[in-house]
Image 1 (spheres, rainbow, N blue to C red):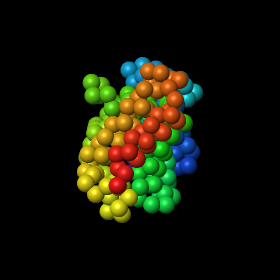
Image 2 (cartoon, helix red, strand yellow):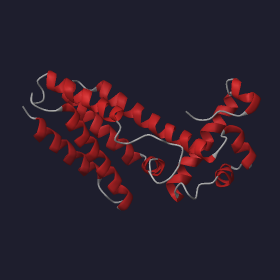
Image 3 (cartoon, rainbow, N blue to C red):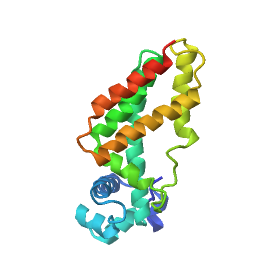
Image 4 (cartoon, helix red, strand yellow):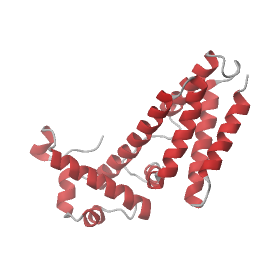
Length: 205
């Protein structure tokens, strides 16, 4: 979780003004990491971009890694809300898997700065204060449960391994989204259609 203000302020709930300031700093950090990378994103640079002093930034976040962690959490929260809403509105189990794939790629297409933040924050060789693993069991289990529900409902073929398909789908999502970093003109709409076509051909009863 994001670090709270230090000292006597850490034991109380932040005020509305403090919450707004933290949100501003997180937004600025997302833009800076996306534009310049983690290595070039210093507390002073964050302060300058926000029009604040470095001390004002440190009041809200004790270190550079604390701000990066807060930015990462904000990106994950936005993605989770988007995907969760899409899955909830899906009319059935198989449609929920489609919604997961489409909304994940769609969210990243609409928020390219978030893609950069995720990539930078999860770079193994750099200590960013984020220790999540993009291949973690928790991540694949969410999608695996959706696949398993589609199998149980008879909408997918009965011999599918839900975990394996979840790993494959998450890998495909990561690959097409990552391609936009190398090629900003890459068509994610067409890529989404291709991933869904692969999914439908693989799962058809």
